[in-house]
Image (cartoon, rainbow, N blue to C red; front, side, top):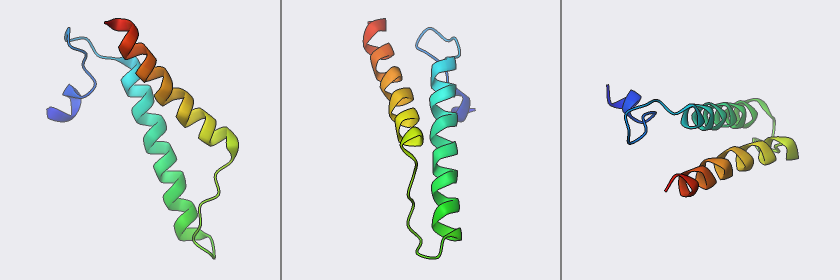
Length: 69
């Protein structure tokens, strides 16, 4: 499956950091869609904790990638 190849590193092992980043991203998108379709004005106003978590996880993945090389 091509979808599962996304979670594999170059050495063939599965990456838990990629899985965690994927889950956080999907959860944030679901939260955004829920807010857009359920609020009266259709504007997503995320809490600062949500923004910090997403940026932290994605930033961690970027830093990890550079540290591996």
